[in-house]
View (cartoon, rainbow, N blue to C red):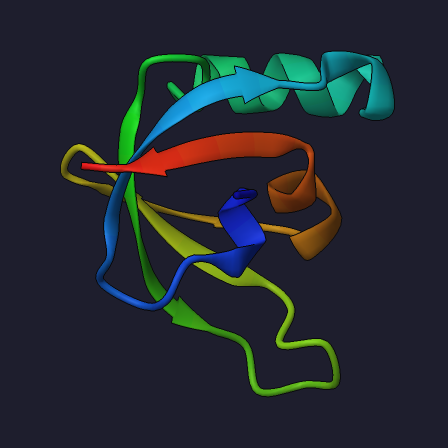
Length: 79
């Protein structure tokens, strides 16, 4: 399952990230925010635009907005 498929408030752990599908500066930004393999996350809410973009992601005590295309690059498992 990829991160964009999670329902709001489902808790999950990132199991892998396809870094090659992301631009290097985007990958660096996500890693700096703690969004990497092993991170425990949950979706706080989704955007209201077509495609429900962006996605508000809870990482620890932070909320981070990421694009849906970035979420698709991350595999997760429910915890």
